[in-house]
Image (cartoon, rainbow, N blue to C red):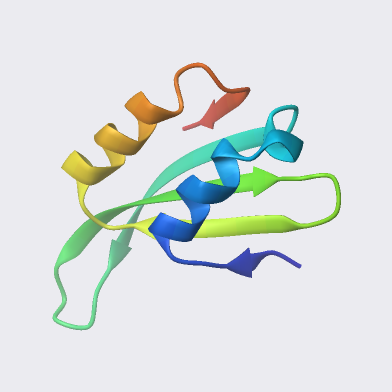
Length: 79
């Protein structure tokens, strides 16, 4: 099962050498929050050799920034 971690930890794991060959999956979907507003939620999943890590970003601008950081990595985007 995937372990959910903070965005800062996720980016540190992506930079490590053992994650260089790992696959990163990006999935965007719409969720309804507690206030009833629809929020675009982006999930980033890192499949490392031993573990699977997940982080969730609610802000579309922050998600775009993270995608720019991951441009040279093995990224699969699911829509």
